[in-house]
Image 1 (cartoon, helix red, strand yellow):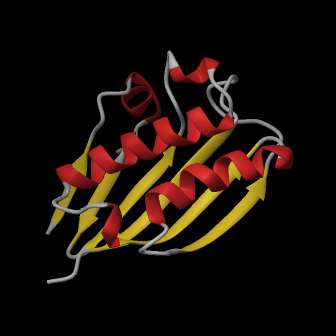
Image 2: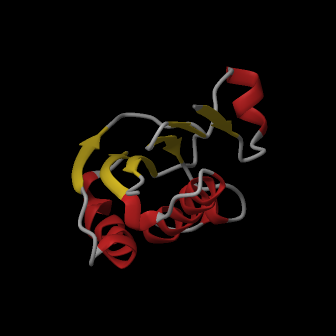
Length: 124
């Protein structure tokens, strides 16, 4: 069983990708950034907004943040790591997925300070 999930973000159609794909009990959520008006916020606000979009995509796949086993976080400035860590910990503190944090030179959209992707496994 494969189910493609859209968040309605226009870039999904423009670029030709899904926000998330459920394949069996696995859910893969694309790299997700904040959207306006949250792009005007700091890295904490942006990470919270991205995680909310991810949570909504997981719900459409009959999953939740509790099912997340891996996060990959792309950040434009490693100085933002404590702010992003705070948002990440608020979402995952009791579930504790594995996680990778990588500094990159640019993200899309240009104002984005953080991008988060997740992998989840739905437990039967």
